[in-house]
Image (cartoon, rainbow, N blue to C red; front, top):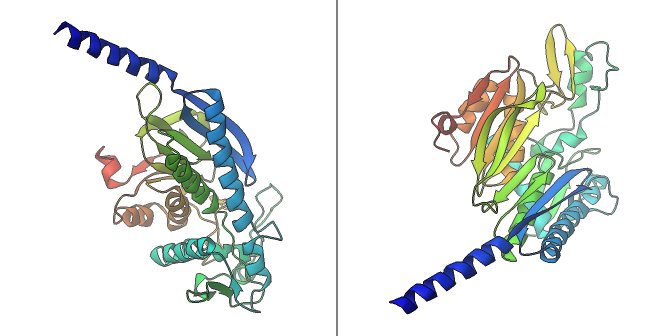
Length: 329
């Protein structure tokens, strides 16, 4: 009996020492043109640095594939050959574009990676003094349309049907990078961490103190104030907001998020926060809901499994999807 007590005590002490060794290590840096923060749990600084370096390398690898700014990326090659010929791409990019098109279909075009074809007629730097003309707005989206992205699964090719058409991953790329780097770290045995891709967050595991990671929904006009806190252990969350880039005409606030179907900026929502298991999906849906508006956006989310949202309207009123409203998420 005494031996059992000694062994139990020894095992408890060893487990306490191992737990005490695990600490949180983090690094903030600029990737994909945005601020990233990578947090991992590791036994020491050296191990933590290795994990973080792996995540950074993975994010840079993805950027080299999807960047429309890099002339050597696969995405740039697709855009250069718009209206000319199909371009053979990697299975990874092909599948990413395929998923993006599926989301476009799901959202009835509120999300569309061919938004990059849009003419930049809206300025959110304070220089606009009047609304663009109806004709110029209509013309600005003449080359936008996911229906004109042609995929050939047999040849792994992507073809943009219209000359001058472009695709871009600004509304899905950082979320995808967060997902991929999280997956890679989990394969390496990292028990917990956070990939924060400029607000596109994916989490797993628990903090060193054994508590879930916490994320706050901030007041769009006062970032020091948090409306609500949520615990995350294996979830992704993304917020889209209009409180930094917008214009006002005739008492209506128009955001920098533009409806790719009409060319008109979205209005009525200050911020849209979406929870799911994938930062890629949350990223795409946050943009889509912004375009849809409060009522349509909530109705849309309430029909999806594993997706929840919090919307803040122009009067700073919070709107919760069904499961969040009943605190079941």
